Image (cartoon, rainbow, N blue to C red; front, side):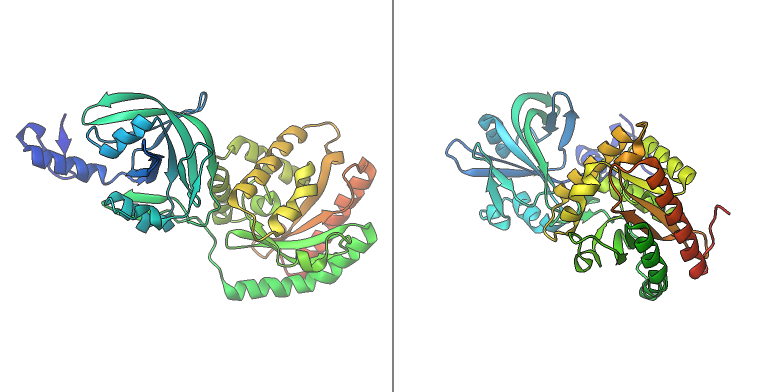
Length: 401
């Protein structure tokens, strides 16, 4: 093995054991790792735990995870002997707890809120994510060992502990989620523009007998700024100010004609929420949005569950992720159906600013699902004409012209 400094080559054979160890740690210090707390109980039922930076997913089918403790770790030996454990992925809010476990403090379990799994293991309530697992094998690997385990259950936290805790260069830190800079003056201008649009939106909503909403992006969220002709079950007071993540696949009209920065935010926010992004599906979705001139929401998730989930301040990240997943799956299932328009619960039309970016979207609903093509086509044409008038009202420019 040859070890090379960034500027000067170093022959491993010429280094002392201490120097090699130090250089090994220095180089690995450039590699960021997640931080996971492995918890279990000993033979007397007492809680035990250890912090690792080597937690990893090994296999999806069957689900297998691993962590790699030192061969001399007393805590690891007890966990392996127990035969089962919980892997608690730590968040940025867990730094103090992490340090207490790392130094072996006697009262380390006092630094978190703990639930007990059905088989009696301590699980950190606000972990970013967690896995319960049964040890299947241990493999010697130099001065460490690889502990392989079969996953028996898994889940995500409520987000209250922040983004995942990261260990880098001997210290702790976290990610920074992309977001658009909040410009108070610009937001005030958006409110004034929406006020100017209200009459035109109200006129269309009444004439077409549909519900209308105007929404925009503020930092990393979509915010409802105005509404018209809402049905009794959707009161104005409950809709105004409603926010939800600006994350794909929702709000594709705002994303399709957005700035490069905003489009990246749309994609990355989805990745943070769902753990992955299917770019070909998003590209196909946006191609359809450009072709039609509007975006569509398909299926029951947007029609039945969306308002309830996003309006509840106690909604967890897991519930949002489940909703976004359902929206995505229903879109995949219905987008290519012959009578897709019968499955549309709402559609969104862009309103453009002077730079040709979608600054606001006109969201139209209350016409279905189940509308025939003639009615649906008439409503979408009317909405697009309304959006064109709104663009003119605020001095905007349609980039498609």
